Image (cartoon, rainbow, N blue to C red; front, side, top):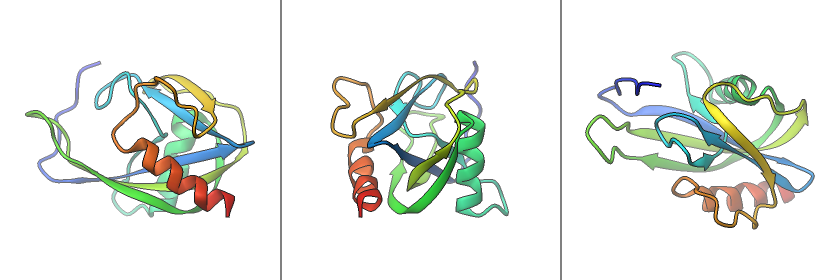
Length: 141
């Protein structure tokens, strides 16, 4: 899979920390950016799309799940590390699983439901632990 040409300006994206029965869903990226890293399902917000609409769409596209959004858990800014890398502002939301079973699209190659404090030796994206802990506090409140 070839890397797409990155825009010359920051991109707005969303991600979902989805909780089900005390576990969180992590997905592994099959392509750039973050190939081989576990992260949260999500992606870019399209022009004219609300953050919540983008989150529901991205989660459905990547995992086929339906979710209930709790609240904004955290945000991260990802700066380009190499020439051609992307600059993203990622709004991460706490969410609860509503229905469905995980069916991955071609952007992902693995998923795991894990206890939030049991990520072990997984290769995860920068800042993921902090996002998960913030989301967990919202879901448990």
